[in-house]
Amino acid sequence: MSTGITYHDFDDNIEIGIARSNHQSGYYEIVLPVSRIYSFFAEKRGFYSVQDRLDLTGIEEYGEVERDLYLTPIERGQTVKMNNVLFYRSKAQLTATSYPELDKLVQMMSENPTIAIQLEGHTDNVGDRFKNIRLSQDRVGVVRNYLINKGISQERITGTGYGGSKPIADNSTEVTRRLNRRVEFRITGY
Image 1 (cartoon, rainbow, N blue to C red):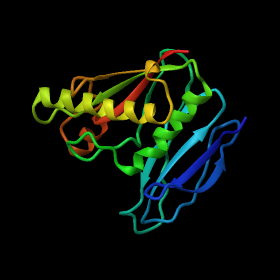
Image 2: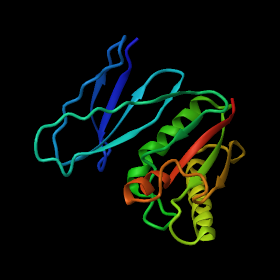
Image 3: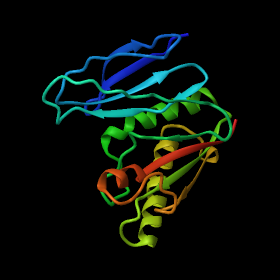
């Protein structure tokens, strides 16, 4: 069965279109104008789609970009990185571009009322370790409050901030440090 791939203008959260993947290979193709940032995700029943972001603002000529999209089964123990949940630098304040991805999580939890999650906040390892742990905890709290304010029961959401103790990439460059600054959720009950 082919999968629908929805893509949006990232800054304005305007849906631009939906592509279909090849039902055997999973291959899909989207042609996008340059000078914009896009978000995109695959959709399939029973799975949570990991959203991705593609920045074409520095591109001046036609080029091809390969990007895999990931679908995570909605089941206990699965962890999902929320790529488009972003904060202002060194603050526990969401950017407006975070709301569409958080709203997608609200929708999944509303459609599956027995699901419980644990939010996990991470930073890079630059700066004071204790301040990074506090920042990651505060960011988890902001995401948790957002979900609660959208109608998700607080009993279904726990959270922990890990600071820079669980990197997924090397911390030697700004590009790799950016990967370590993230919020994930793990399905703890289903």
